[in-house]
Image (tube, rainbow, N blue to C red; front, top):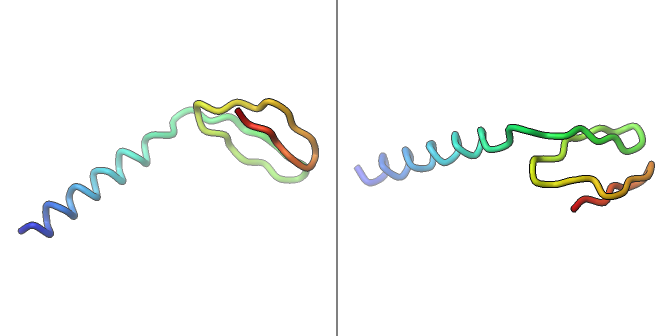
Length: 53
Protein backbone atom coordinates (compact mmCIF):
# COMPACT_ATOMS: atom_id res chain seq x y z
CA UNK A 1 0.00 0.00 0.00
CA UNK A 2 2.82 2.41 0.88
CA UNK A 3 4.59 1.55 -2.38
CA UNK A 4 1.53 2.61 -4.39
CA UNK A 5 1.44 6.03 -2.69
CA UNK A 6 5.15 6.60 -3.31
CA UNK A 7 4.82 5.51 -6.94
CA UNK A 8 1.85 7.84 -7.45
CA UNK A 9 3.72 10.77 -5.86
CA UNK A 10 6.77 10.20 -8.08
CA UNK A 11 4.58 9.95 -11.18
CA UNK A 12 2.83 13.23 -10.35
CA UNK A 13 6.16 15.00 -9.78
CA UNK A 14 7.49 13.76 -13.14
CA UNK A 15 4.38 15.00 -14.95
CA UNK A 16 4.63 18.43 -13.31
CA UNK A 17 8.35 18.73 -14.11
CA UNK A 18 7.67 17.76 -17.70
CA UNK A 19 5.28 20.68 -18.07
CA UNK A 20 7.64 23.13 -16.31
CA UNK A 21 9.54 24.28 -19.38
CA UNK A 22 6.99 26.08 -21.52
CA UNK A 23 8.88 28.99 -23.01
CA UNK A 24 12.33 28.43 -24.48
CA UNK A 25 14.66 30.38 -26.73
CA UNK A 26 16.73 28.80 -29.50
CA UNK A 27 20.46 29.55 -29.56
CA UNK A 28 22.95 28.38 -32.16
CA UNK A 29 26.67 27.93 -31.54
CA UNK A 30 28.58 27.04 -34.64
CA UNK A 31 26.72 24.16 -36.28
CA UNK A 32 24.80 23.23 -33.11
CA UNK A 33 21.44 24.58 -31.97
CA UNK A 34 19.87 24.18 -28.53
CA UNK A 35 17.17 25.77 -26.40
CA UNK A 36 17.54 27.92 -23.30
CA UNK A 37 14.80 27.51 -20.69
CA UNK A 38 12.74 30.41 -19.41
CA UNK A 39 14.57 32.44 -16.77
CA UNK A 40 17.92 32.46 -18.59
CA UNK A 41 19.12 34.93 -21.17
CA UNK A 42 22.04 35.06 -23.56
CA UNK A 43 24.65 37.61 -22.49
CA UNK A 44 27.33 36.96 -25.10
CA UNK A 45 27.98 34.35 -27.76
CA UNK A 46 30.65 33.42 -30.26
CA UNK A 47 31.04 30.47 -32.64
CA UNK A 48 32.59 28.48 -29.77
CA UNK A 49 30.68 29.46 -26.61
CA UNK A 50 27.55 31.03 -25.13
CA UNK A 51 27.48 33.01 -21.87
CA UNK A 52 24.15 32.79 -20.03
CA UNK A 53 22.80 34.82 -17.15
